[in-house]
Length: 253
Image 1 (cartoon, rainbow, N blue to C red):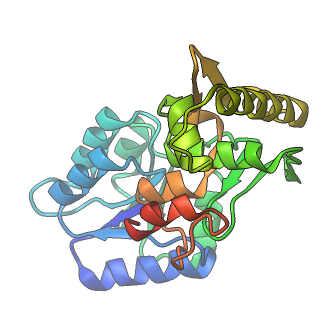
Image 2 (cartoon, helix red, strand yellow):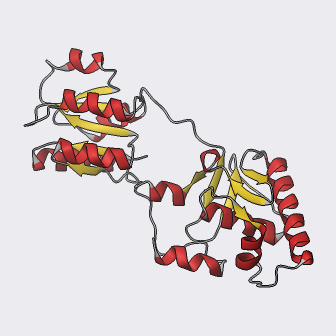
Image 3 (tube, rainbow, N blue to C red):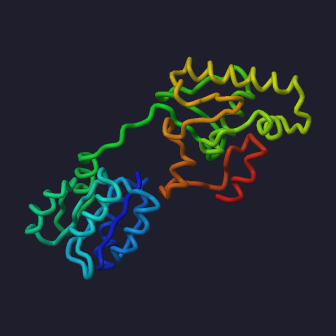
């Protein structure tokens, strides 16, 4: 979950962050003191939840909330104010919650467990940090061919781009000889990959089209993709450790 928080008073933002982390230690809020900075960041990475102070110099929290709604109508806005007088105006713009300062961890838990807009969890989960693995509804996917699993890993790394057989051969098989036998082998591996995913209940993940292969990034929940969007996910320097070709990406994370 990507969480933004803004308050023009450093002490208040520190107290808010402490409450959020006490309630959910895995969340690392991105904090701001200026509305303009938050808006710029939201254009790059749309947050799931934004905790907004209301009385701020320049752009007040209500105006900022409207601007955020223009970027993403389903962003969850939780106002954090020292006053109750703005609550009616807050809910007129479909805020998810309204907290009165000072907030505590229990307040945060109540608000985040009752969000107006909730993400539907994806059933296919991809883990790339450490060793590559795939699960569907919590059950590990079994790949009959190790190369099928490696092909999927490479397509995940390529983030949905269409990848040719020739590129698959060069990267996964480390071969400059694009022979007929290699092409046939890649076709066989791709067919088994597709069948394994369909059997596991993940038929919408993998695509074949005119000799190219790709995945649908929107059909999976992947730690790499969340990390690239700016989510606070623990990355300790390990990425698809079982595959040598993953070293380039690891060096650029």
